[in-house]
Length: 305
Image 1 (tube, rainbow, N blue to C red):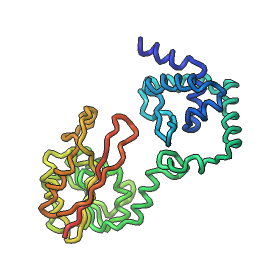
Image 2 (image 1 turned 30 degrees about the vertical axis):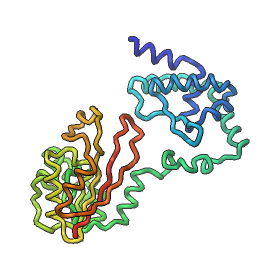
Image 3 (image 1 turned 180 degrees about the vertical axis):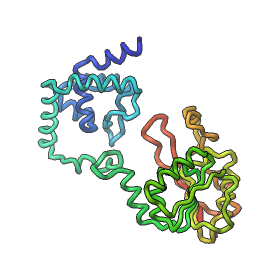
Image 4 (image 1 turned 180 degrees about the horizontal axis):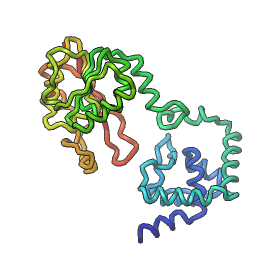
């Protein structure tokens, strides 16, 4: 009950409701919110601090300022409470007036959307510019040849990968995943995809039979990652490439709920495990995820001589 009461108190304040409605429209700085709402900066900052502490908004540094936005990973009960409060308040005259004030502010400052997001475009939504559509675009330009996806899961990426492969072999140790993947590919009419139930440590593939091997966020699930990477080198043809996407070493307990056997990996270990067949893998740390607890991924490519 205390948690419920706290959420209700948080959303019962008129100013905080007005802030949330504006931030739902677009991310804004304290200075912009102050100008739009015609309230004192200290008042705006105080309300934002409470919303941030509750986990409903977060801020991203932008030069000397901070731009606030709604969190997409807020606690479920708080998100539901905000959804209810939003529905109850969205037709309030003050909310409509704030939106018009925001439009006037943008017109007065001469900033259109393109100018506002310059330098921050990677954090902003733009119609059609989603990671899903970009992934399809890059895959269409790719050439994977004979491709093996280790830990393919239920085939969510099979359609994307099959179009760039002469033939695609999806391997997973889970019978349920294999069944779901076969069904998905059958429904999609993907005739160049083969499904095999097997562990990554013992790939049922001939030596030098693959042009590309993929490990896309699956290495943390295997029992012996060193053995899996050795197998990747065995099945890769000369000049073949391993594409590995996995988690960097971390201490987040949340990983256990997803069945991970390993809490990410160290760069040194990955390089050592690949050394028998690739002396110089290329390794890049990607930015931490915006969603808590902010897992960080490693992108590694290794070419077989």
